[in-house]
Image 1 (spheres, rainbow, N blue to C red):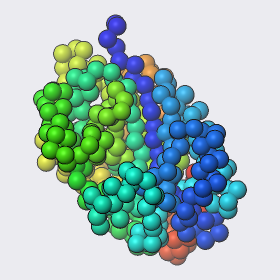
Image 2 (cartoon, helix red, strand yellow; image 1 turned 135 degrees about the vertical axis):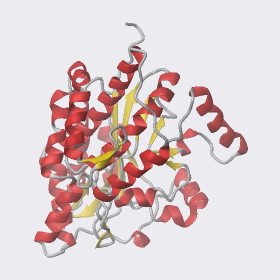
Image 3 (cartoon, one colour; image 1 turned 120 degrees about the vertical axis):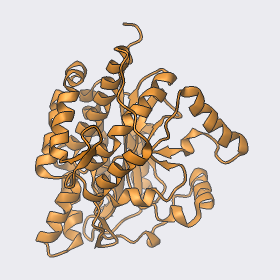
Length: 369
């Protein structure tokens, strides 16, 4: 079939840079950024805060290509940081840092964000993981966005990596999302009848002068403004490479599964954001520990059972895309816990010592490279 999407993958990750000895956040040295750019080109860039660094894979045709590229990116960042006595961590919140002590990167885009978003953006000491799936057609992107939204809480629950904020246990699995939700144009995407409705809505804000382009729309799932992709943005960043790849493979497989339904003149049932939002809350509150609502059954189902259902649901797609091992790797998250679960276990064993949690995150970053 000539109209079969390529379902290419692109993964973006944001890291925090810490001092290896103290565990405190550190400004990315200019020499380190220059060295990284020399090797990685435009696949690495500064982020909003001076303690952050962002990487992005190239357009990957398979999960194996994504693994190779992400391994290379993480390795270079880790090696260059080590030359300065620093280390990257891939957790969505630093366990003990104070956001008030951080400074934003001096760049025109970031200066404008500071001016536009005022005190809200100052608290953005958070890191995320974004997964792009290449779909090509704008109409297909709009259609699948409406359906894929149902699975966003599942992705959040599995990815949770931000239980601590300023040295305190928040009681949440993903505190990051509560910080991010203070920005405008965030949260679950609205239901759109077609691409035309989406474009008219975006153009209305652009024409008024509220935003310059669609990149200022920060929904949990959005059509990319730069690429012909659908971009899942709800996930916390993953300390372990293997878990990042499993989540990316799940996004890719879910997109293909929904496309398969479309080719058979079927579709996943669309639910109002009010209902999906309840699962979103349960995911950020409990991670994989509290269960999500199955609206078809009308009951709360444990996440391990839902993961088994997801693995079965996308089995044909995982086979077609060559990512069966990564999809089965979702069981590792369920069995061993999310990063939030692991961080809490380390903190408990260390008597609440947050430096031990930072050391744990430093080790996980390179554990499976």
